[in-house]
Length: 163
Image (tube, rainbow, N blue to C red; front, side):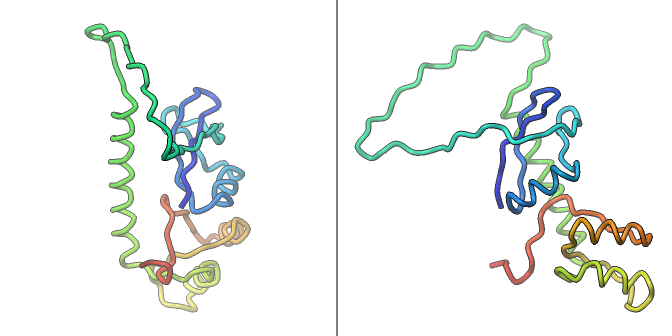
């Protein structure tokens, strides 16, 4: 799992994106699947990131000046990054639980997803929910054949890779 800071090119909104790998990010961006959670724009790119490195053991901690922000005026809308992040985390948590519940009755078929979906569609296998991996080309081919295949909202790890 890799986390990138992303930025919306239209509204300059910053947010995090979680991906299985850098390749997953590149594929999703190329397919136009990345949207800004604030304004919905799909003009999304990686934001500049600075690594969070700890100080050396022989260095004294530096003191930072306190952040003196003006008090908000009464009646004006106020938002804070921590509030947005907490809401976002709650939303992702609910989404993860819903996906977990949905996958509990689904069979992991790995990279055989396209073949198994065809077998089920054409009646060569019993109808049942399946999930696995498929290339963008395989998904396009399935769509041309009238076979529905939807991406899962969150990454799924194969059963053999779980602890």
